[in-house]
Every structure is written in C-alpha cells, then in structure tokens.
Amino acid sequence: MPPVAILDIDGTLADSNYQHTIAWYRALRQQGLTYPLWQIHRRIGMGGEKLIADLAGEDVEREHGDAVRAAEKPLYLELILEVAPIPGARDLVEELKDRGHRVVLASSAKSDEVDHFLDLLGLREIVDGWTTGDDVEETKPAPDPIEAALASVDAADGRSAGVLVGDSIWDCESARRAGIESIGVLTGGFAAERLREAGAACVFESLVDLRTRLDETPLGRSRPAR
Image 1 (tube, helix red, strand yellow):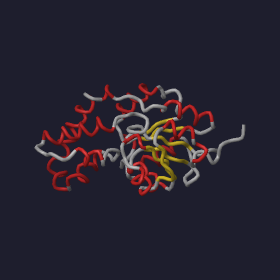
Image 2 (cartoon, one colour):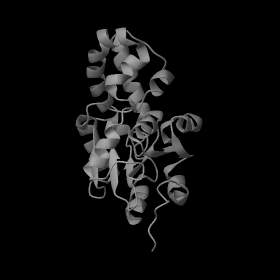
Image 3 (cartoon, one colour):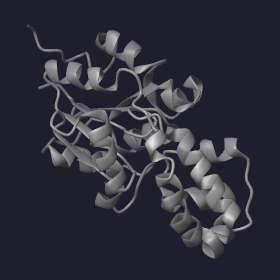
Image 4 (cartoon, helix red, strand yellow):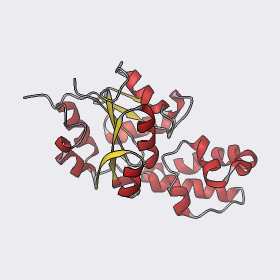
C-alpha cells in the first residue's frame, strides 16, 4: 500500500509563515520585547509553547510566555484573511489521492485555524483526516503530530508507513523523530540546505515542482501500476 502522505499546512499548503512572524513580533513588542523578524521567522513551524523559550530563553518564557501567546492569537487572526493558498496545493492533494495515497494534514496550529484553512484550500472533503496542535501533548519538532496523523488513519508504525511534506526544519525534524522520511519545499522561506540538514530526503522549489517530480521522491516509490 502506498505510504500515507502527511502534509503540513502553514507554509506548505497555505502562505502564512510571514503573517505568523508579524503576529509574534507584535505580541512580543506588547511586552516590551523586540527581536529581529528573521530570528522569529526561523522558528515558525515550531509549536507556540516552545517558540519563546527557543527565541528568548527560559527566563523570558517564565515571565512573559503566557502573555505573549495570548496576544499572538488575536494578532494573527487579524491577518489570517490575507493568507492565500500556496500555488498547486489542491492539485498536489488530488494527485496524491489519484495515486492511491491516504492524505492527512498534520499541523501545530489550533483547531480553529486548521478549520479555516480546510475551507480556504477546499480540502475538507478530499483528505482522509487532519490533526492539530490541540490533539497532541507536544507540537513540532516533537514526533507527536506525525504519530497522531498516522494513528488517525490506522497506519502502522515504521518508515514505510508515511512520508511528510513540509516547509520548515521543524517539520523535517518531527518526521525524523517519528522515524519517517520527509520532503522539503521552499514555500515557507527556509533554505534548502537547512531542510536537508534537518532530514529532508529531497527539496523542491514549489508544490508544482514537487507534483511534477513525485516519482523522484519517497512518495513515488510505491506508485501503483495503472
């Protein structure tokens, strides 16, 4: 059976990474904390409960973490309507389904954000399932989101069970920790070299490029005969 295709949402299917970056920047500024946008962007894709400590240290997390997270949510929702689908997102999902893959969306985002993107991308009736940050104890780069995605379609553990498509080093690290392969795309603003260092088996410039060259990837190895 073809491996389960596990797709990240933010930065992979929806062009939202920079809106997230701005929201975190503004939330931090509300607490009198200023960090370069590039440093925040580098951590987009990591779960929000981990981002502040990784960016600013444990002392800042203890003093300001809850307040920053509480502020970031409404700030991001002010920007979410500006987010557009990544070109080729729905076409890639349809291609994967045509090839016999089960497709699961695995995100560290909250459930209401995932619901918004299911409708924006037109994927609610196409994919086999989805998981959110509300479904796991730890978000990316922990393996929990990948394991939850596999469990949602009753996939067995192991490297042949699934392949992740993601845009961030945190996606690739999460897949590596879960024992599955990952495919990187440059749509989230992370460098190809960094995605490979984090474990990506291959990296593509766009979802359109990935769809055209699926047979070169771990998702293409088990393509059923037609």
